[in-house]
Length: 277
Image 1 (cartoon, rainbow, N blue to C red):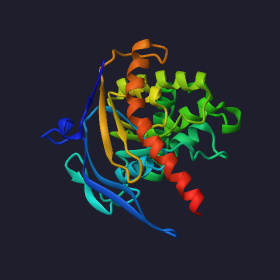
Image 2: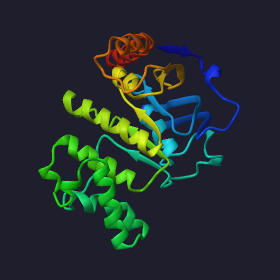
Image 3: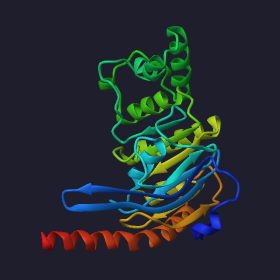
Image 4: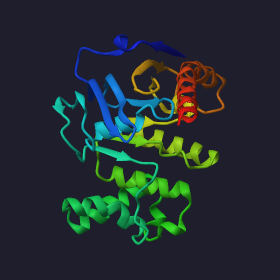
């Protein structure tokens, strides 16, 4: 069902879609230097769906920002398709939990926004937006405004806005965390379907271990700060998967056993900081 593998056992000799080598990131804070990430080595292969879990503060979001080119490594290198990441690219798009949609624009106008910024002709923008809205089952809502949509529909608008740019890599930072369980389950199905249809490479950050096992080909567990890769689980359960599947629950329990050690470290550190403040 799932096997836990140390990092050196999953690195491949060939070039991956995304390659991280010795990636570290530190920050200067009011309390002094903070080492967010340290020595991250990771390969993500073309068409792979990889999920990253870890305790709060372990640098998961920082890692996505680095891959997206929105931030720079303190040390190490990140490569995509054999090219070093030096900045943002339309081939690597990041979807945040805060969707960043524009309430004064219609659904279709929100989806067209990136295309228009790129200088795509108006008619092509309209056609591509309508096509991708049908893909995420929002074809009948292109002239609606955000206040008329449910939370799950807004999330699909954000997904459509990324898909219309036709990125090769989709980076997702806890995109479903604020949704109710029923809506989240539906979007799991939707995202998996879109992933199969588009063949995109997806890197998905979540706090939810069962969500990670439900979606991922591989689950990466990170340590508490500084964030390192502790272990990786290859998920071989057949698709489509459901959160109620007993086999999925067993795999999630194995992942959680590894994660709990890091969560306990985070809690002890926070308690120590509070008592010494």
